[in-house]
Image 1 (cartoon, rainbow, N blue to C red):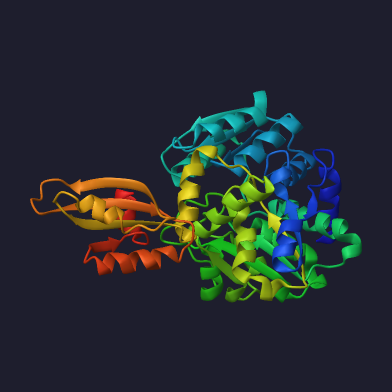
Image 2: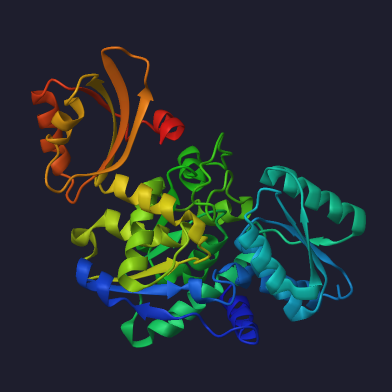
Length: 415
């Protein structure tokens, strides 16, 4: 595998230089370790997906398929990598996207592809979009470019590992490599390239809690299709890991796959933006969120490479990210209160708040009650322990309340 990946990496230099491998001083100091970030968010399309797409096209065109058109289905990073490579090779391509795709992603794909790419919006869900792309390929003879489940795609993603080894140089081999997982192409490629250079325990895989396709497949010993997927971490929200990718990863243990809460990922996005000025998409923050979950005792003194897989973040999502981050950090909670309908009742309630507590939302939910009214209230504070004191004050005042912060169903309907 190494020889083919090295050839792919060399050919790739005609498209873009190696992405940086940066020693991050902020994270290294926090964990007492040498934390290197492989910055795939700094590729031309702000994700590693350009690698697999380039290698796939390179192999097809070298095999005498010049004159053929290409097609893919994607609402995100794969579409952008596909479009960029179409323009690079000067070949026509069609990108099928769901109608619900954000305009920002459509526009970026169009910019990267230029006159060589046509975008077609089909269906409300990815499955409908993918079926339309397959039908197009069958009807026109266009070559379908898969997002992750193909040997040439895996080989292209493996160039990440080739660059890491070259860039570490005098630092030697890493003690731990942290990899985000969606369809598994990146993980299959990187672990395959490292081969016997690193022990299996030197790899940690990260999935969002809402899309644990690798973890569940390793637990079952076979590829599992998830019944449902939380799409918040859209770059890794895959309901079924690739068959070839699982075959490459099945040697790892299920406990080497860390499942990370979507709200915890938001804490990482907000911190990296505020502290480091680094813009990460949710999937791009997975590996850094895993470092926080591991903590200093597990990382101290070690050399760690965390792959930052992408930075295609739509800033319209920032309010939602901030909201989720504060809730996960215990700095914001939502309550439903039963407040007496009498003069001074609201003033009495406000007097229960501490000096660092701030009302972020206040809304009457029921205005027809004669004696009591139901109120939705959101409270922000500066330290999580302030809520324990606040609840003591609520109880001492005989206030009837319900904390709905972690009630996903209720919170999604009201908040």
